[in-house]
Image (cartoon, rainbow, N blue to C red; front, side, top):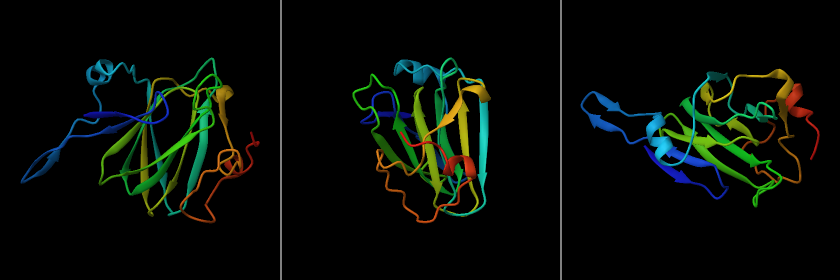
Amino acid sequence: MKIIPQQIQGIYLLEIEPFQDERGFFARQFCQQELARAGLKMPIKQCNLSGNTHRGTLRGLHYQKPPFPETKIVSCLQGSIFDVVVDLRPDSATYLQHITVELSAQNGKMLFIPPLCAHGFQTLQDHTTVYYQLDEFFHPEAYDGVRYNDPKLNISWPLENPILNERDKNYALL
């Protein structure tokens, strides 16, 4: 597995290194030892799937507040997504900056997202499945979000007229 630091401290692009033969491929998607060698801790407590029927579905931007902040690894098992991570750590040199990356079943890329960074995505294809590995359990009282189209963030989402739920549509502006 390749572990590639991104321009926001603590965020890493993870790339599988597939072994190919006539049957297809085999690749390691997660290894605590490899992450630990890179200085990353990830004791998995929960794994979630997000099934998305339609292209243009937008989920986010979500995070968990203290005392239950979460680290997550996000990958796309079917279809493709435009993935966004926003740094919400007030003491960070990259506070309110964001990164974007395309995650897909074909490219096998994943994002390692540290605590107090908001995460969201927009599906680029119908029938897209996103997989989350989390180091914290879900705590509804700590769950929060940032408006996907907040002008302070200036995120350029690829598809107009996203499919959103009411909660994501109505988060407060920063």
